[in-house]
Image (cartoon, rainbow over all chains, first blue to last red; front, side, top):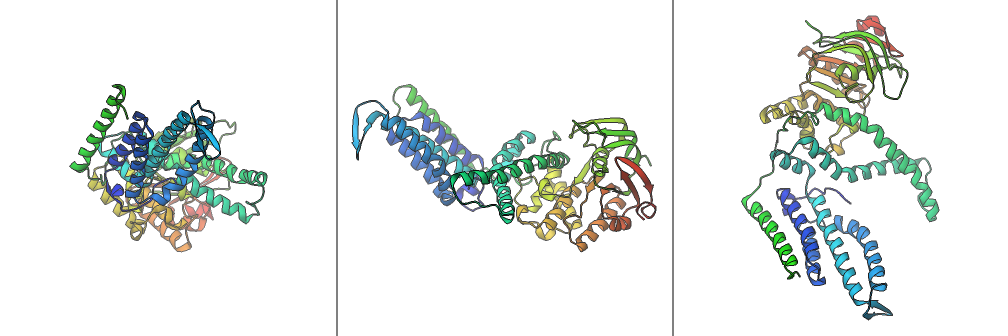
Length: 253
Length: 223
């Protein structure tokens, strides 16, 4: 599942900026380093984040769904079609530099997916709104960001309802790939048309409730931002600067 | 007392449509009134609410011809489908109800007081900690009504607000509309439920094809 998973882990309790800063730092460091070992460490850090957030079961599936096809493509492109020298990998002779390249690129993608899906699963949109409101971020802009983050779970819930309704009316989901493809029509059309129809009412309701009022929103329960977390975010920033400084000085990992 | 909304020869046409949804309306709304707006499907009842509350054409697009004078500062709106009116950002009913006044920049203590009062009025206090997406349609509709009341609207527009409610909750809602009007707001309710509307309304309008064909007491209009 992609979206917020209520919980009580350290990441759930943290100020929303802290997991965001952590994921942002992992992303930047993943592009600052280029050895498989360093990328492996970044991936490990990203997986640890999901473990600390106690959201591994929710995060692993979408990560695998998104990362595995990419890994396959990278291994074929770089490993099989890459330059010499070649090494034996079972019955295949694969390109050694290509394999290294595939490991680095695939590792980056995996780390980024783990880190950001963990943030999505552990940072409550409501707490993020409160935190950003307390910092004076204009609410209309904020709403656009957060409603985008919550779009996937809302659409999933809606799709599940439509699917149940269509199954009651005789829609069959199994069968050949062609039959499955045909079954998409009765799902996608009502999903898209329903969403468009609802947008009108939602715009009016949200306008009445002040989303476009331009007033500075009142934070009701801004999450506490402890000194330790602020220090951690500064340390993460310095780590990123150090990683890029080393990279551009020719001492990168 | 000066009307809160006054329409003179007002016609409204939605974008991309040639036939006006409202034709030559002469109509006033005053503080303390509960006006039941009824008519067959397509008569323009919803459009009348949107024009009176100032949402059309500002948000819907389209053209408003004629005169519209308005003193409405804080309109509230409730539609028949509560799930389209959720913010999608709040993980508790209390946060959902407090969302509106907080977004308008009302000071924190007043937001909390307004949300508590609105939840009490809509009889959803016991749902305060519930996740809105887990509520039934009827519970959710009462939460949406509370969210509109928390804005302390000077004009409250409701479009078939009892569609999701059981008979007892519908009775309670219409009684509440009367209380809201007695506290000084103007209430416009578009509804096919003429029986309940007749009990709660101080005035009624019957629309047909975008025109007001009757305007008077509920007994005169809804009989």
